Length: 392
Image (cartoon, rainbow, N blue to C red; front, side, top):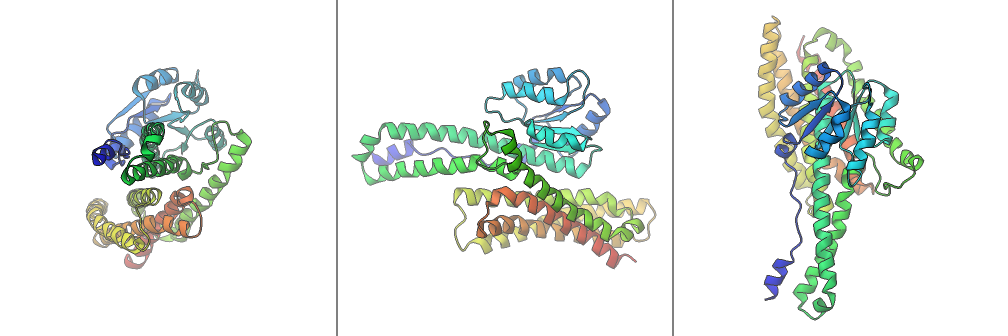
């Protein structure tokens, strides 16, 4: 009898976000220039996203979002009649929890901080960079979908906790098994609250910040992470300066830079997501860290070899069309760089959050920033370093 009752009151579970879920995410592009819309659609569809709509009329955005509940809105800030800031004000009125799934598009550096303070979650700079667009869209969609899953999970779990608390007197008179169920539900509820704060922490929004937080305090909480992100991004740019002679000599390598960075970012991001979930839900047992790192290194190697072969073939074809005598060795460089970068990305995706936790920092807060820098630097160092050594 008690076993059946325990099964009836079992806590709800979170459905993990898969790559397929992200590619099926509903995206709305808002820009007054048709050329920008077509370019973004081409980038996203080329990456596998299959639910993309667009509009050149900003006044229709709120109506479309209310009807279709988009997972991500790519919003241009400077549009005639109604600018992006006015659109975001309208979206705030129809988003019940105040979470705006907005990725702003701007060519004005001064507008970026203003857009984040207005409720946007991230930004894309003009002119568009393929790697940046795909990375930011992927991260935003994953955070948005995880936000929705954890919200539904938290609501269902909250209701379950209320039901158990209402029958607390009865539970005290029941068996130890039912009492244990109550304790597990309360513990799961606490973990769900921590998990619900994770999407914001990944982009530098502290747990203590709420909707009612004064904008000056919000800026003090968020801005240091933006500065930290800028400094780490400069490390990747430094690789270009170090190998500028190689780039000038082998300009074809520049074509494969966004491809390499995109693959390594996705590899590291997948590992990071799994590790953070394991840490948040208490699934990663002490002493199992080495096993996790070895597993992710192996997955990085296998995935790197497979994508590296395809990239090497593409490099050979491109170099041959350009009548370059170094086509075979260039394809070897791309293969080795892709394989090595995926291995490093997988390892870093596991080690970074574990290291931050060991040193007493919140793994969700800075992991994505540190990981992005590590994968970008490793990818560029391998690609240009191997090219410098092997291609004479």
